[in-house]
Image: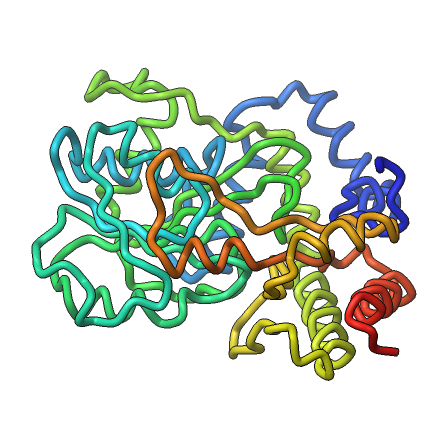
Length: 342
């Protein structure tokens, strides 16, 4: 079914609501011919660093590139071991493999006793679904003191403030809380040396010949679009919080469902429910015209037990600022109908 009554994500609707303002900025950029690494990118970097609470931000092509360049700066390569979450999107682990390093997985909700008692070259935590990583980054810091922590915060803009980790990777893929109209990402940090290195690395080191770089320049047009959207970020976060609360209130009586926790600082990139009937519920909602996403992040390597079990039983419901109350009510009503509730 392609014509959903309730889409999981509808970027066109947000554009329609802000078309006049968006087109002013798009026309300005195109008429000026300011297309790559121009003033709009600098403004965006300033906006992001201020919002996150770091000294520096570098606009890049994607959150994946942000993770990759952070690891590259640390000179991680063949045979080096990097601690990574088993529950995460594939890019978190993919960047480690691309550098010929060895990803060592930790399971969902691991305890201190379950962590390997070795020293890693770096470790990565992932803040998925708009939530902190259940406090695990703090545990990692205590266990592996002195080891650089890179936060994969691609799904958590607004949840991570004034970070003390080595670096934080962000994605502005269209479906993210702050989404561009194409690919875009960033790396934030307080380390000046990292900042200077990544700033040159994203553009081939063409000004310094210091090292081999990559092409990971943020598109100036995307930066201009993101700068407009940045102004609406507080109301976007508030709208998502309201939808999440409405879901939790409406679905609370369904004891067969495990609902997400409303923890402090959660920003609701996704509203994820857990049920052993996940696949049947997915098909039922599809027939009702509701687009949902199975929370599966396939890896080329076997995942750990609890991470795989979680992914096999979770479903993402539509949760974004473009949804109407009637659409959210319809989703709640349909889920209740599947479980025989009124």
